[in-house]
Length: 75
Image (cartoon, rainbow, N blue to C red; front, side, top):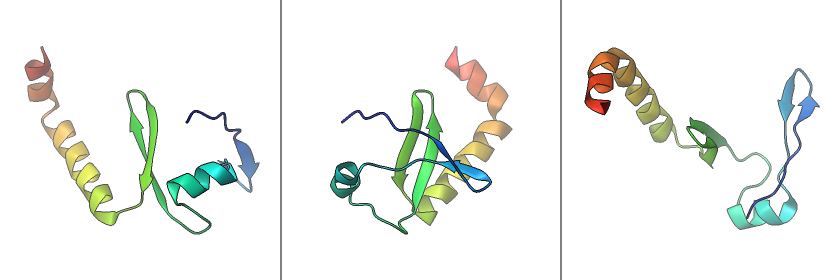
């Protein structure tokens, strides 16, 4: 489902709220942790999982270390 969300100031940060029906379908509620992942198409929100966060950090380090090789392979 596509819904427009508004970003609001929350203290010194910014945040948004999910409509109640969307939160229910996604099975998220107050206190749940989400992991935002920046993609080429936008932001993907996934349930927070320390293993996933660690895997993404490892992949980012590998991509940085082997950036020249990855660039050559992408051609």
